[in-house]
Length: 344
Image (cartoon, rainbow, N blue to C red; front, side, top):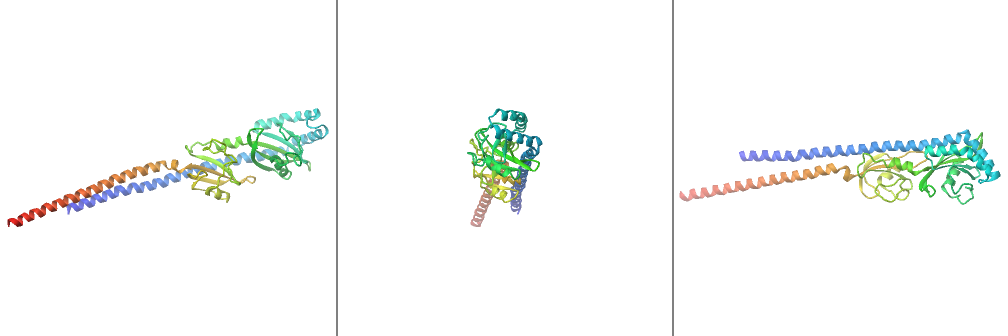
């Protein structure tokens, strides 16, 4: 009876010792997972706010510039000189020199790649930094299919944005904001600011707190990255296709977080959101590889496996040797009984 009681107590103790760590582990796993997602969500929301501010500020810049009386006056004077003397004429260059310091200030202080004045007939009459299409006609000239021609036509109606494309002149991807310029009620043309991708890239490459595999990136509604992957030595901007469960949900308007496979096919914890800017239909994603995020969990799983193996081995060994001792005691008892019966 004492042996059975001892065995029952031992089994209960071993069972308790095995179950409690696994219960604690499950609680720890859920807590760590929740904490990882909280960090990703916070990073995503802060980054979204920064990107909002960047583009909305540029939207405000072009809107204010287009309403500035100095700009409309410059449009009128430059237009007259352009048609009378040509873009290389000394009279045009003299008028240009009046406005050049102000435009160079905007380019340098705001970090623009360039500023353009384009007449309503499509003539590019001014650029702060000389471009190939200066002096050309964006309706019928050789650049009629260029992105700047597209943004110009849109901006004849209202403030507009043109997505990033490669620009050989500045050796970078650039985007455009443009707005119509009026004098009284008369449309003079369009002012365009050109934005380098380096501004956006600097926002997205700040990876503090995201470990070795954390990544923040943008995806356009064409399925191509609007950023560079930290896992590629070559630029992925407008080259890397991203079609994942997270991007599909973001483009459907959902804000969320889940474990998915990223564009490399690697399981990641992902927090995603649409940008919700009127002029941009992009998705923002913040990822970290599951292997790195759950590394402490995997370590605990390994330790629990060792503990379970040790407890299992001890339990099996105890049962084996107990049964063996019990069997031997029975055999000895049977021998003694047999000897006693023989003597009798």
